[in-house]
Image (cartoon, rainbow, N blue to C red):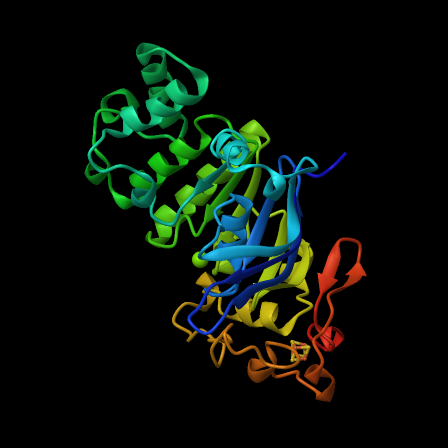
Length: 324
Ligand code: SF4
Ligand code: MG
């Protein structure tokens, strides 16, 4: 049967003063039910734009999906009228943001905001909706959920606020959760707790999870598969085991070398030299070329993503030299 989510050859451009800028150049990945896909890359690589496109939030006049499809169990979401998409958001696909505050209304209690979902989408009574809201807060392990349902967003710590954001996202039991840098603003210990919580929820409910992050270390333990993005393209894809053990793209290798390792505490982390390309000034050839230690003359031509194993993909001419 069709995968839970299939992003197919997605091309997106944004409006800019001097003409449209292409920010996605043919992004593709799939997620199955019960699976966690980590989407990795620096900011500006197109990870969040892809997520927003999946949610149907890339819209004129600011942005435009030029080509491609986003299929949920085979149904093309981009072809649905806005009303249909709105109905899917929250109920079938839900998003967790870097800062839950951006998804919360500061002047309403968190219990009220979650209860509203049940009233709007399930037609529940006030009392039933409140009970469900408390259950949702309890499901994300917020202590004294019944009491805390009466608190306002600012009364929660950063970590607890992310839990509220997750409660909001999972309340209606969506089949797919997209979490965009859900732990970036948190300290390391709390990060690990939130990642563990997402993994637990994903396992308990058989949800598909797309976990977007710039930090390969954060998701190493829970990702089933990995898609690495650079300059609006997926440059490597594979199982987490394969990609972490044997990266097949210089950019993936560089991201791995930038992961803090407890056994190497105190040692200076490698940083990836150079900066990501400006999408308004696309370079000819491979976009990673100015930063790449493996580049050859062949790299003047854009490397086409190709399979190097079952479900394993790279977009590099020199991939065989990366992990000898
Ligand atoms: Fe580096 Fe060339 Fe591979 Fe691009 S195609 S990542 S420049 S080796
Ligand atoms: Mg982002």
